[in-house]
Image (cartoon, rainbow, N blue to C red; front, side, top):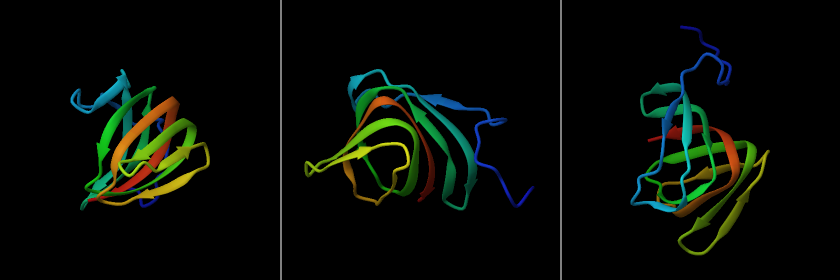
Length: 113
């Protein structure tokens, strides 16, 4: 095992999923995840979604950086956060609302359970 790993999709098999139908608001988004690290409750990799909107409820802590695309996070309190390339955010446990992918979005992420 190498102690340095480049964050890239090359050479990493993707996992393709869709949101739980009970959480889907609009569209038919397809999520593609390239998991690069999974150990001791820490997860890191790349995630991409095609357009659509679904409800989210975070029980985990997540840092992410938007690489491409455009998405909108709307909190259950009505707060709106637009996500553009170059944006970095932290989502803390307890965040609830919707995630809307307007243009196919690619992000890198680190999740801590």
